[in-house]
Amino acid sequence: MAVEFNFLTKSINNASGSTLVLFASTTGKDKKLAVQLKGLTKDSLSVLSDLASDSPFKGNLNDSLFLRGTSAVQGFKNVALVGIGDLKKADHEIIRRASAVALKTLKAHGVTEATVAFESISLAGKDKDSKIAAIFDGFYLADYSSDLFKSKKEDKKLSVSALFGLASSAKSAQKIHKDSLALCESINFSRSLGDTPGNKMNPVKLAEAAKKAAEGTGLKVTVWDDARIKKEKMGCFHSVSLGGGVEPRLIIMEYKGGGSKKPICYVGKGLTFDSGGICIKPGAGMDEMKFDMCGGANVIGTMLAIAKLKLKVNVIGIVPASENMPGPMANKPGDIVTARNGKTVEVINTDAEGRLILSDALVYASEQEPQFIVDAATLTGAMVIALGDTHTGFFSRDDKLTQKIKKAASSAGELVWEMPMHEEHAKDMKGAYADLQNVTARKGAGSAHGAVFLAEFVDSKIPWAHFDIAGTAWNTGHRIPYNNAKGASGCMIRTFVELAKQHV
Ligand code: BES
Ligand code: ZN
Ligand code: ZN
Image (cartoon, rainbow, N blue to C red):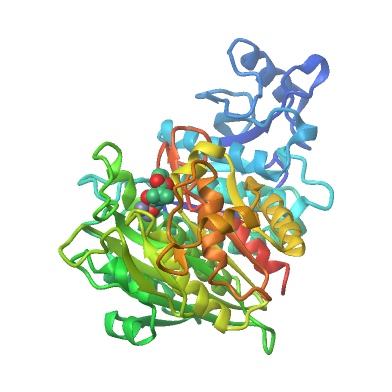
């Protein structure tokens, strides 16, 4: 990562440096621009608001104003004003976004050394720590660049001094910073897995990458190969891999930080490329199917983050990894395959492969007798139609887990939406020749049909939720400033980590 933080305890009157970053709001008198920072002189404030009033910058979120060569604040050559909108409404997610805008503004102006006045954001109240964390998160998450495969990489470093007026605040911010870095590094790693195309990322490589990333974290990684997957009677999962040129892998990551507590299981769809198989997809947009392993990548990221944060929980991450290709041994429409729990499935559509690889992984997860299971999968195009790219839809029959998820997502600053799953949908998935069929002829509710299919493989006594991240796994434009316009988002890692934190 190119951003590096160090900590500085000084009043703004005594601080100096190249570029000063100040968060500015619209809550001043007459909705004028306001900068709240103890120690900032009246002169500075009036020069800043005069300069700003000559510009379109009004302190709104997503806006910034870079003042080069200004004498507005003594000791600094430049000042970057970064908008947070209405100060009263500036929760941690707004701050995360504003901080991302700060990083982008600094980068755009070629800044290599900056001082961020953390206290120019109101850091009062019980969510003080999450607001401080959000500033670090915004910088680190926005720093991820998709130049993995560009011959020329962005190699500039940015050294940031986190300025606090009080030594005690700077000290507690250091611990918060460490945790933010652990989380964001894990998210950025997941994003890099997602962004890697199918010729450079396959099940074998995904397993190797997970193993390598886990080194030194205390995570135990076990990888099952083709023969083991077959021997373990994971017939649905195995069948999907047959059309590809690369063997499947089952990646099992375990972290034990919670003594004798029951584990939490995270399961992720690791389809390294989904061509649709024999029911091949149309060419336009097919490149996006390199992202079909984002559920798996985000489970790997969740596991890395939990281990690095040393949370006092036991967690198991399970990622079935496969290609879905139309090779000569590929599943054919009408084929009947058998899952690890003995249920038989008629593969009506080979493009509904995610539910096949997840079915066996969910049976395996249930066998671990966890407190609960959550899975993440780019499962259905229907989810994109239903919720677009703002909310991740989740399905659960367990009210307690549903409440926990809503709380976790809100603490994480990620948008989720509870989706319905009903017996009527389950009826549609009954097979004519086998116990189940992997798709239904009935139109509509495609995501719910995917969810109820998965439910057939989860022990009904275990609370479980399915997250369909088809619309949120990768970015489709500049919606969130800490996400690139294009590329894997790392969505739900923050929510999944928050879920684990609820059980420490
Ligand atoms: N990976 C796709 C789902 C997908 C589509 C994710 C578009 C993101 C964007 C999945 O394997 C798939 O192809 N699902 C089919 C299911 C259908 C055949 C019932 C779909 O959604 O079209
Ligand atoms: Zn598919
Ligand atoms: Zn798929």
